[in-house]
Length: 514
Image (tube, rainbow, N blue to C red):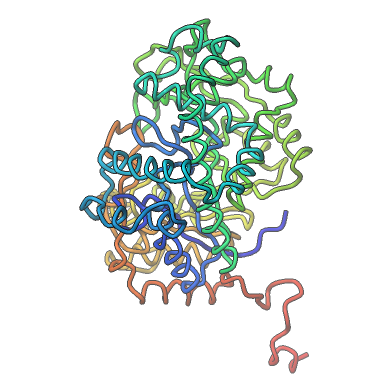
């Protein structure tokens, strides 16, 4: 697949400004897209958009296909006649700069309940809602039953529900569907609202020439509709508890490894089904975004299994993944679609071969490149064209914070390499990504705003305090957008044809020379 030269910004919608305690899909999302267009960016990368659970992580969702109802905009609900102006204006005074998820969730649930009662008792959007439910019934029906049962069970994980329903015995499932019919419809309505609002945001982005890059995590949460409704696809015991869980082994940064806790797939059962669940998951992703980034790509070649119950990831083992079979099945079902491979971590020749077999662009994290001299693969002069250059990702420190805490030898080399002083490091890093041969260059908004550790989105292994950062419009000064626009144009990433592009018009002076 041909990838044009382009650039973009990494920002989760929860990090958008707004008065409702969390970024949402209302006016701020449209203003953000307009800002990207002014900066001549053609990509907006987001994190997973699913409904978050304990820890508020978008990588631990109640469903791999549903949307996050806390992203629903009260202002858009007012425009649809589902809320009164007074109900919107009575929002609590939430703090700026970070999301306090507890109060935000409490408020959003109240607002969504009000909207549901108004919808249920009226006729607004009824036909559109019915069409949505019919089109998405394949995953939606299981999801809304799962969520209604979670509500009924005080939020407990499905493995702690009564045995009959945790095992999905037919009589218990049918009884629950009848008993919880209204609650299930309320959750259907929330999904309808999310996808309706997201479609408007995505349409606005498309009209501005901006594509959206979204994440598909390799693993799903144990406490999810996916695992509850497809138990046979995961390594679980008779009670539904994992026998092994996902993680990564000890390394220089984490001496006891990382214990993620996600259940591991029974890849033999996925293969037996023709990878049907994965195919539907990829199809669902491309209904929401234009480009997919597969998180933890190396796990498709081999993943690290840790015995369930271990306190650390020190005693796991590498186990083969599905390999080429999965990607052949996806390509056969959905065609050749734009997929980026998050190929970081312990990468073997087999992982590289799998990525190259399917022509998937890998990632280069530039702030990792200054520690071992000019041969490091993450330095721009070593990039291949077929890759995505990042200043950093949501799991990294913002560039300014990395530079402040880096060993002196790395700081000196970075300044010498980039031709900058300490003050200019962040922008020099962004410029080096833009100027590189990598067909795609992406910066965190935190780096564009030159923010430090206080703006970090996620610290892997930290149990709390993640995913909360939000920016303010006053931080996104005009000169920052203008500088991005200047570089996007100078380095051929603005979406306009350049003389280096096949089929691009020949400049007049070049024609004269000819």
